[in-house]
Image (cartoon, rainbow, N blue to C red; front, side):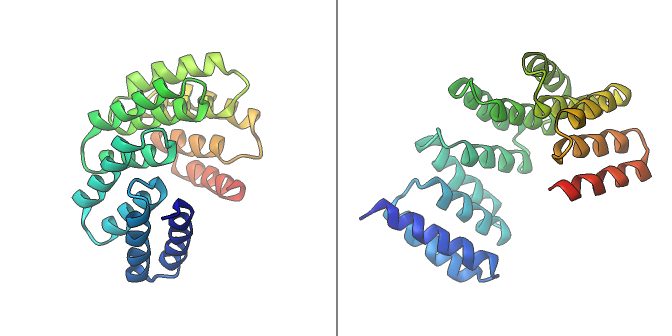
Length: 206
């Protein structure tokens, strides 16, 4: 069987899902997995279909199988980490991102994602340490500055968070990431109206 056929079926499944036809999407994705059992895109879509059917444990299992057999697909691995967080398995989620950073030390987006996972896992202090180091090593990149802003906001250090968010905005004024971080910092500071304004600025750049 041609693995390319699996990709076509996944694309069709994604289209069916977007059109609200969950049964057809699941049928197509199952056919794709018959052709290519560890196809990461198919497993991510399958996991989301299962989650929508209130079958979170099965969703997690399909992503776990994908990660164990195809761990180099970054998007699928990060989706696995997201599901782990949602199902209250923060330590495993952090381990997955640690492993990704080890596999892809050159990938800035992976390192930033690791920081976000640590924030969501309730490990803001560790996230601050990671993202502060990342921001120092990549002073011209908005992603680490925005991530650091979010980590600082999670720690309650809203003044410092706003400074980092503004730095992210100055580095990438046409991107949403800095404004999203600013909104989070403002919300953490109790400045709801200002946070909403930052949300609007982020939405305009998404």
